[in-house]
Image 1 (cartoon, rainbow, N blue to C red):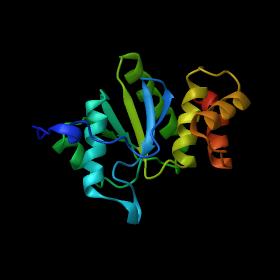
Image 2 (image 1 turned 180 degrees about the vertical axis):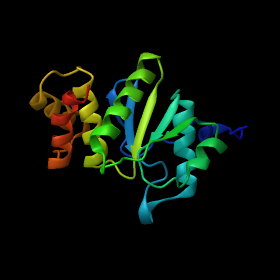
Image 3 (image 1 turned 180 degrees about the horizontal axis):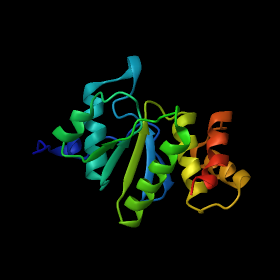
Length: 168
């Protein structure tokens, strides 16, 4: 059972670089608590509380290591660990997009995170926009992804978006 908190702590704090991909359905962020030298345990707890209290059904982690996944359990936040596999990128994307799509169609509210809000995470989510048919053109999907995240995409991210429609 998650601890009962009072006052301002009961709502937690918004994860760093929180960005909606599909408003009120699918969001992305930096790893709760940060990464590397900036990682803070208390911040991680506060951000997980915010995710839970804002009605997200699942946190989906695409980082390689299973570090800190137990914190989701301790705070009563369901999660899925889906480490990004660049050795079989097409297979991983195909499976990941189907899983995201199934969860969204079932009415689940999702937040996906990598270590940072970088080109890998952003590219994967831009690829989902293209794969799902929300945007029917590679160039438009790249532009939409760049506009949503406020960043110019690197070649990896652009390639994922262009690969996405071929994964059905």
